Length: 147
Figure 1 (cartoon, rainbow, N blue to C red):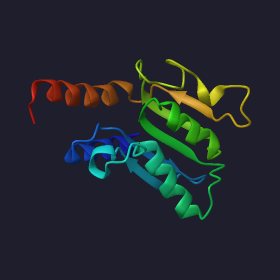
Figure 2: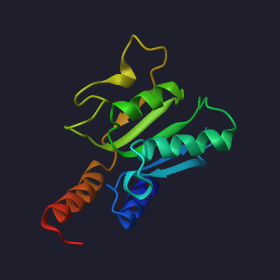
Figure 3: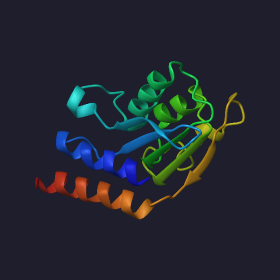
């Protein structure tokens, strides 16, 4: 989670919401890194999870990420939860819950929906306070206009 938090902090340089993600292979090696890039790239799909999953798939040379773990600082949204299921990740670890858009237990629970053909293991709340504090500081600054 510390590496994902580092990615989140790096997003601040581009005025993107500080969310970071990494993908670990079976041995624990980082094969994908991502941070929000929506502002930097003008891409609505530029969520940290999607960026990290894309990089991991390129590193592996295929879209199936069985045996891998996605670690992300915030509970994934519906788009990202769908990408997690579709990429066949074995495990999802996330920090803070997202009461406004979370799709892994807060508003929906896409990744554990029994109607889907793949359901990763979920570990929630890892370094949640640190993840939430980074987001709180970012949004407080955005509301007050501080940089």
